[in-house]
Every structure is written in structure tokens, then in C-alpha cells.
Length: 359
Image 1: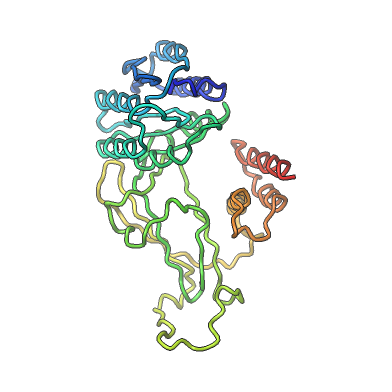
Image 2: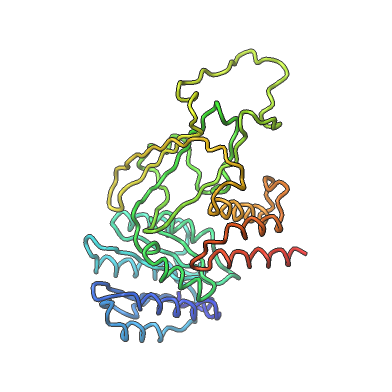
């Protein structure tokens, strides 16, 4: 995206620096092309071997921002170039760098989603990198990338660009599983109530779990996914699970299976497809109740819980309970001991900044 809205220092200039980092990781077996769009779309660099770095970097250096935004035309051109240079058995991907300000031309989100879905079925996936803050169309970019069997990341600094395009390059570019779905069955002998924290825009109906036609998320090489549930144990005195005063006339306690009498807390079921496959595979894992207190859990678990709590505080969630920024900092600091890339330290700084802004 080289439209006028990309002229800020944290937009096109940062795109160029990030792409320069990526180019340094390419080799002779890789190929890269550069398609741009502003008032119209154009091809700045035809498909070029990755070891011709001077040629690629020179093309990047010539990019300047200006004009309106014909985003759909630029994306169509990028997909066309990817198809024309398709590498069978390779990683074929369009990387869209934009602030999401599609304001000219055939710019409806529905058309972009349909295009992305069709191209993904033909083996060309999409990664979207969002830049800038003022007019960043975050929800639209996430929606399009999700339908394109791709990923979406927000980049606001050179360090973040290095993280996405160098340190986590394989996860950004290489999809190892598509349409990944997770379904959990809690043991009613141990859990009276549960709630998934977050993922509001990623929830599927229960029956969609076994439907291979339903789109789901993708996993990149080296990526991990964390989902946190808040549960009410059966031995809890929570008001959420207090039985009615009178016995129900039409209902009785459901009979439990033999499995419910075990130490299993839940069963996790996972469905996924190979990147070039259309039929899903099923994996199932029983999980026992470890009965750990929070302080006894792993540092990774504690850090993940702190991040989730911080997110609920920022959203003003009714489920945030008595959590506060100080509690988040305390838990996250304890969980940040193992931090080889410095990402957890960066999170701590963000929490401190949010705390100051809240005053």
C-alpha cells in the first residue's frame, strides 16, 4: 500500500525497513515480486530470485507514498503474480502491508474476503501486516486474513518488524495446519460452569466442529495457541451454581458415565487439515485435574493469565473481577523470568504505561 495515508513515519518507511530485513533472509530458491497500489495498481518488481538482493532492495527503496487507495486492484495483481509464479510443493503467499484504509475502487470487505477464500483454495495464502494507528482498520484486516488461511500482525516498531519477519519468519510464511478447531468437553462431575476468555469472534457452533466446510484458524510453523477457561468447580459455593430452592418438576440429574468418575477434568479434541488437504484429522487428549494452586502453576501459565487479565481490564470487561494493573504487573513479572527475545519485558512496559495513563 503506497497510498497517501501510508506517508507517516510508522507506515511506509517502516514497511520498507521490515521488508529489507525479510529480504536478507531469502536465498536462491526463493522468489519475490513487489506489487503496489495507490490510485492504481502496478508491478514494481517482477518475480525475482531471492539471492538478487541488490535488485530487490533497489525496488523497495523506490517506493513512495501518495494518492488514493485502490486496494482491491493491488491485491488482485499480487495474487495474479503469485499464480503465474506458483511453486508446486512450495510456500506461495501474498504479504499485504497496509493501514487498511481501502477507500477507492471495489473496496467492499465482502469482495476482498471472497477473493482471499478463492485464492487460498488454490494454494496461495495471505499474510496481512497492519501499520499505523490513526486509521488502522484492524477488524477488517483480521477478517480478510482469517478467510485467506493466513495470519495478521500489527507492526509499530522496527523491533516488532524484526519479530514478525525475521525471528518468527517461518510462522509468518509457512502454514503447517489449516482450519484448526478446538473443542473441549468438561467433566460435569468436576466442573459446574465454565467460560472461555476471549475469542468472541472465533467461536464456532458445536456442530461446526465436525463440518469440514466450516472455515477456522491456521497455525504457522513454530506458533503456539493459548486458550484460557475460567471454571467453577463442583465443590465451589459460587452463586452461579447454587441450585434452585425447589426441585425441578421436569428435569432430574443427568446420569454420568464411568469416565466422569475418573480424575479427568476435561477432554480436548483437535481437528486440523494439512495445508493442501480438504479432509480433517481428529486428535483427542484427556486432561487430568492437577489440583494446583495458582502459585504452583508454570511461569508460562502465570504470564498467560496476566496477559488475559490485562486484556479484560483494557476492555472494561464485566468479568475482570477485582483484577487491577498492579496485580497484572506482579503476576507477569514473576512469569517473565524466561524471556529470550525480550517480548515479556516489552509487555511489562506496556502495562506500566497503561497504568500511568489510567491515573
